Amino acid sequence: MTESTDIPSRSRVPPTMAAPHWRPQMRFAAIWIAIIGLICFCAIVAPRSLLPSTFLAIIPLAAFLAIAAIGETLVLMARGIDLSIPAVITLSSTIILGFSGGRDEAMLAAVAGALFFSAAIGFINGLLVAVFELNALIVTLAVGAITSGITLWYRESLPQEARVPPGMATWGDARLLDLNFSVWIVAALAVILNLVLRKTAIGRQFSAVGANPRAAWVAGLNVALYQMAAFTVAAFLYGIAGILVSAFIRNPTLKVGEPYLLAPIAAAVLGGTAMSGGIGSMVAVAGAALFLTQLGQVLQMLGLSSALQFVIEGIAIALGMAFSRLNFTQWAGPKNSIWRRKQNADGVGSKVAGENPFAVVNRHHRPPAI
Image 1 (cartoon, rainbow, N blue to C red):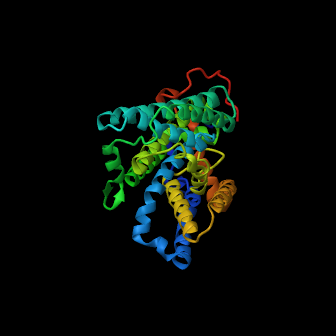
Image 2: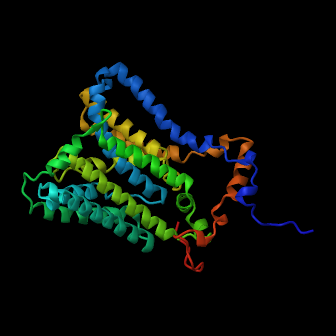
Image 3: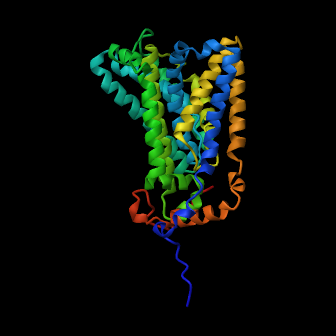
């Protein structure tokens, strides 16, 4: 009797063969350990940085960084990188000033315009990277430079004293349970995106595309469309960050996006996002944004120069990249073979192309470049 070679379905995998969840979570736990260590360090060298008033003052800044870092995480999970974040945030804030004219009645139109143009920039990035297969680093730098030029030209037509509408400024200072509204927005985004990535078919397939684009293409997934979606959604999130920053500072300038060039990448990799794609936790990334913000606050309280902060961010990126390349599977011991069998049972090949709106209909397309 010939043995069947069919891949076992999800329902036939015994519960004892479930993937060891502790292993992928190890890379995400590191940032929380680092936060505890930072708190202990602050308690010794700068106790004032742990005062409730100080924490409530910096938490909105951490929220802005977290939103940008979550967007960068989506791009990294799709095996890309995005350096257009400062340009998109600056464009978003400038559109808020220009479209609203400081009037509450035009506020919704200004918000819609800022989000639309931000997403459009992300779509252009995704199109050039995923479809035309250009280098993501060069593309996002170039698109960011063009966006910055357009923003500068548009900002020159606005009054120097231009401000956001009063209603938006009031909302930017509003709090719920003593926390700025932006903090609750970040918490909602992190939880929702985590659930989408882990609990839905599209989320798991997105992770599969980032982990192994060629295998995902063979399985019938439209790799290019997933990558384009990552850049587009990420830029949409940058637009949200630009709106929240504008509401918070009320009179944003052309330098409003400058702090968000390297910091989102540092937060993403410190939060355990794999530079090789496919792995990321939005909650851990939000924790990493809080870590970097608190670290910067402590450095300022200690009287250290801002140049040192850039040095530390660069070191954080290097350490995060090194940490993301660690092979946690070799620590699993005897459970390793069980986990691999579970991976084969739940692989992207078990998905039917018709179940996914992003599936490739023609299997004879050229495989994606890796």
